[in-house]
Amino acid sequence: MRCFREPSVNVLMLTPMVPHADAPSAGAIVMHGELMAVAAHHDVTLATLATSADDSAIQTLRDSGLRVHAVPRRRDHGVGALVRRGTLGIRWRFGHLPLRTLVFHERAMQATLDRLGGVPFDAVHIIDNAMAQYRRPRARTTLLSEYEVRVDAEDGMVSARAMRSARDREAERQRWRRYQSEVWSSVDRVQVFTDRDATTVRELAPQASGRVFVNPFGVDLPASVGHGPLPGSLVFVGGFAHPPNVDAAVWLAETILPLVRARCPGARLTIVGADPPGAVQRLAGAETVVTGRVDAVDPYIDSAEVVVAPLRSGGGMRLKVLQAMAREKPVVTTPRGAEGIWNPPGAPTLRVADDAEGIAAHIVQLLGSREARCTLGARARAAVAEHHTWEQFAERVDALYASLPVAGAAA
Image (cartoon, rainbow, N blue to C red; front, side):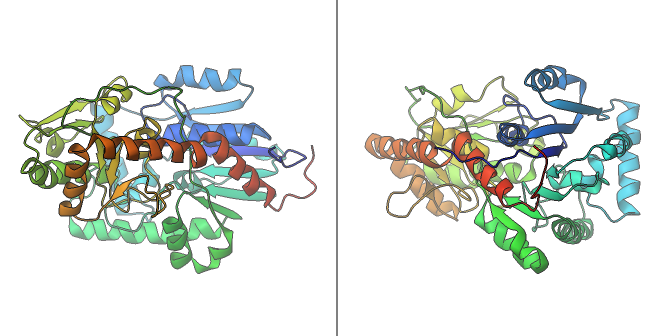
């Protein structure tokens, strides 16, 4: 039986995008899981940035009983887009905030939060540190869900083309270090998804060490999974607005795949994900298909004999890895790709290597053995069922809220 904190608390949640269970963005899916976990036991008001494409998702949230303040996010086209990019560049050049934070800045959001200042919130729950830039209403306690701790030069990039010079990239990295440390020090709890991110928070902001809470997120566990994978089929899934996915796809196609094909000539790679830049589009050829945006990724995952996620940068967890595991697929990844995922040494649920040769060796072994694929896939699905469902995530969110200094909150 689950134990819930009583009485419930009045929570203001802030998100840089509309939480949506069926969104193309992994971030929006995880935000939806976290929002629902909190709303199950507490009184929630949501302030979120939104586009015109979010109207249906917003109505769904309102129909569920949430109070939603949706602030339009400017997504200009044509000349307007050029002006906006130029303005962002100037603000970055002469300011001190990371570029990604500036991208999610809207004056209307601050005006909305100022209007909410008269509401007696017990807690403000910031989802994604981009929302920590805003002046927030007073509350008894403040939480931050840190979706990706940014350390490396690539981690905080808005896109693969955002920072061209080494000087600008180093400046951005330093901005992230300062900004994150300030944010972590300003809240009562910092929730992260992995032990690695928790360690990094403690190293960069020792003053916040006692505030860190590790809570790996969950995924939906499908009642049934597709079978009949295509022989020799390798699949990579990831949105390419996130630079670590660009690096992973290029490394997989240009370096790892040739090593695999030297021993498995029939191996074919499908790269699935929205907004592929030129570096990824150029990978398409006789051995590699680049799909771009697709209506659903599940059919591509189901078609794979092996799902590959060779990530070398970025923090947080990888939703697409968990989704493949939930669909009973054998997954080969790197230590970064495995972060936060249940993977005991004695009964591994993932194959993990940190170099091209090691990743290729795992892929070749799995392509050559149906038994090995079935065993790993079954362990992967069992791990999701036992450790990574949204219900289990929600239980850990309950524990986080139970640790908050909000004693005496009104029911």
